[in-house]
Image (cartoon, rainbow, N blue to C red):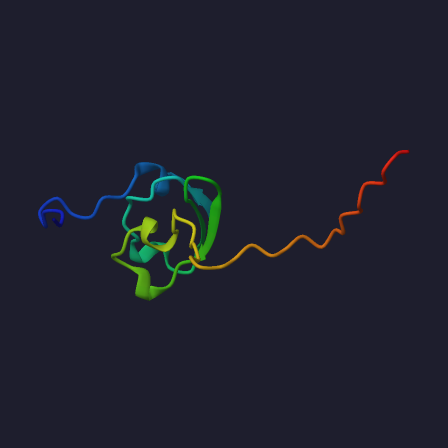
Length: 93
């Protein structure tokens, strides 16, 4: 469900206070506004920060859409055999 038009886009207040060209963002739910175009942002994905340069095509989307929180898994790959050679145990007489 989308946000009501009369409310306007949600933007966290801490994003307006920062005057930097490059900043860190924990608020993934905030909308990208036209005044953010050309800035560099690092968006928190739950484990670390993902770098992003904001372009005009991103305006209106949310910051969280550009930082994936899940790892890509590849099913069906086998584990590679270890490269270390196992030496046989010598028998003691």
